[in-house]
Amino acid sequence: MKILSAIGICLILVFILSSCVAGPNKLEKTPNEEGKVAGFWKGLWHGLISPITFIISIFSKTIRFYEVHNNGSWYNFGFVLGAGLFLSGGILGKKSSKKKR
Image (cartoon, rainbow, N blue to C red; front, side):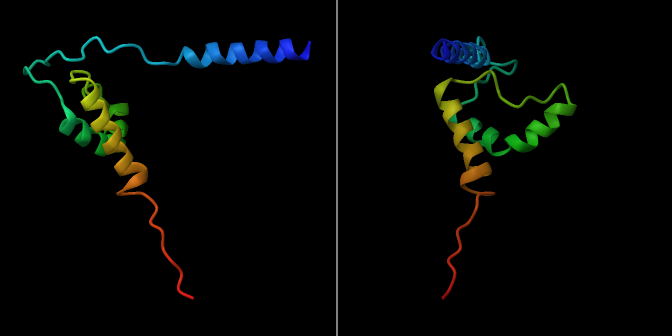
């Protein structure tokens, strides 16, 4: 009986967590009003400024956190790389210091 309860709880958790998965971006690979599609370099820049953009996007309806008119995988790679450099791997990341003995 305990095994069935554990399996039931796991299934419920799987369903709850899978409902949070993002859907497809229907505007991917389509140009914006200016006829431009964001690529790798724009994604890198957007990732680097993502903490600032996120805060501004909370208070403004005209600023978006993520460019939906992008070229797909390369934009996503640049965005994740930029966000990683800013948040944990680079600019604000922890610097290891060696103690002198």
